[in-house]
Length: 123
Image (cartoon, rainbow, N blue to C red; front, side):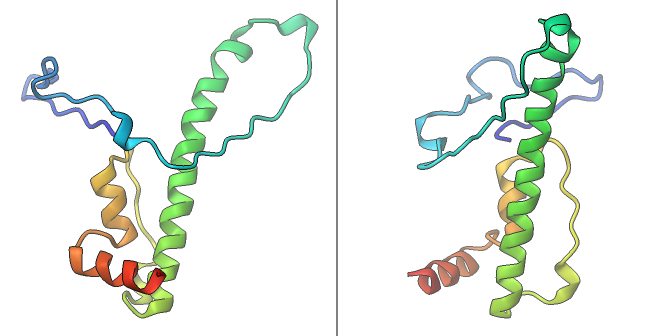
């Protein structure tokens, strides 16, 4: 969610090292991050099979995208209830990777004035 790769005309990644690429740091960690993973039980014939080692990372990655879409939808509903946007903004397209500037814009936090208006009303 914090990464976006830029490529040149040959399809090669432009970022080379830490001069242009910055990894997520301590200030990008949320204050509260609750995760619950359900226990699916023990399968005697499927220990470390492709289902055990391949699908969980894919499903966890997809769950982050789905949770981000749900958060954006809720933020847009809140903006609609405040009268900041009209109903034509109820549908949106969230591409993958969904980096932070795109998520902020879809949530309606793309302008400082709108963000400050939201911040003042939430206090």
